[in-house]
Image (tube, rainbow, N blue to C red):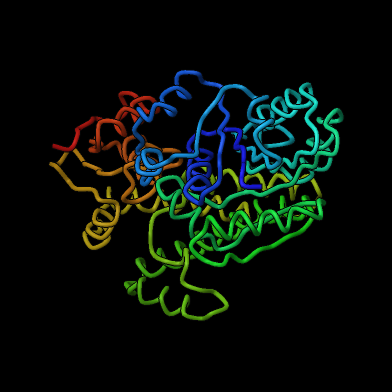
Length: 386
């Protein structure tokens, strides 16, 4: 069982595949883009994600292919890590890509395979949809093993997981997953084995709780700023209670990125569909936006104490009476990965322009500015770092 196949070797799947290779597994990665696959095999590709370049250059037992059958033939263990983007509608996540893939696999009629889906799906997808899409796959099972990984920190996240979550009805999967992750990670992971439905609920519930915690911390931060208290000391004291904890309980900007906002909305939708009040999650999202509005008001306002504090925390500066400059607008502070989805700083910048009638200069690296221009066009002025 030292051979593993990973279908979907994009940003997340490639990191997983290369770390498996580093752990001395023989890994085949399957993708649909021939040029990308060729560049991976020739090791002629560079990545912004920390650690990926070294992992690829030092790999000896990893190869990529566009041949799905070759990937299936390579191993009994098949990890599937493809996109499930926001789709809206009753399912929230768009399962089209993973469902189409399972139908393609079904046409090839593989035998004795253990499929492990790693992308985020809505509860009951594994039991009610995925398993129904592979009727021609003899003695095959589908399990769920979502990751809790942030872009810009993928390697560290995979190697140091808080938990390994596995939803399965396959009695052999526990042994296999222990064997794989014990070799791949830097620690003895905390395993949680359960049904696929339970694991699907855990996945979106975890992020829903974290965002609620962040919004609560931001609400207390705004109270401290308004009253003149030291918000860092206040939140440190609250978080020192072990029932609350310090993680994600610090003064800061609103939550953003590809996962937190969408998983919170997905959980709310699931609650609403099952007639369970979701006002906690609704308030979480509402206060996240309120926090942005307050920062914009602080920066644009006449209260010099709050203006100075907000400018420092947003990494913004007053260029002159007409212009405000905001630096480093990636959704994740300090990251150079060009992801601006739900960026708090860009939301604040947008409010400064549209609500407070200020002129805003966005200063960042060329690749991040390119992403901002795609989204906002001429709303802002732009300046690259020297």
